[in-house]
Image (cartoon, rainbow, N blue to C red; front, side, top):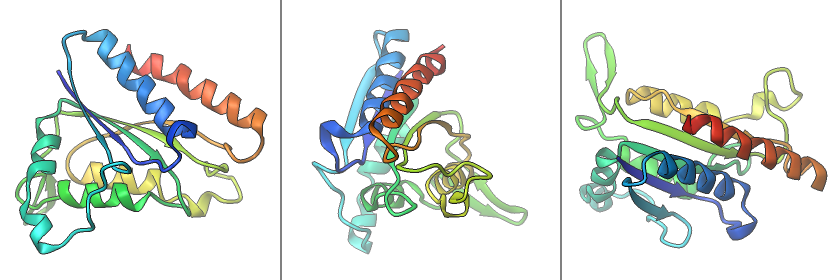
Length: 183
């Protein structure tokens, strides 16, 4: 199994999404000790925003297509995903490679791979919460991956900015969830 690990948090070692995505990768590797890991840190090695010339380079797309499992650390910044992660997605959403248009609508071509996303959000954005209408991270990522034929799985740490106690508890629960995902 080839695991592609994508991180996009600017918070370095203080990042909840990095801690959770690292745990997910650790669980996957423990279940398959001969797995191959490919890591891409979109902060320390950012991809430039998409241009026509950058679009011609298919190395990021090939890396994604070659992976059996993709683990993504995705913090919420200003109600949506980091621009670093958007630049990566721009390179994997390619007509004719990961999706195609048909007479009956779009068809995803990238199915058959597992995508697990470690979400980190400062507040609470679940249905019924006062800020639920502002949640554009999980909904966007779910839509994007569904569009290319993948049903992503999510592990979320919410309320990270509410208090130190809430942050610690939320991360603890999310790390516990990573064990279930590997089963």
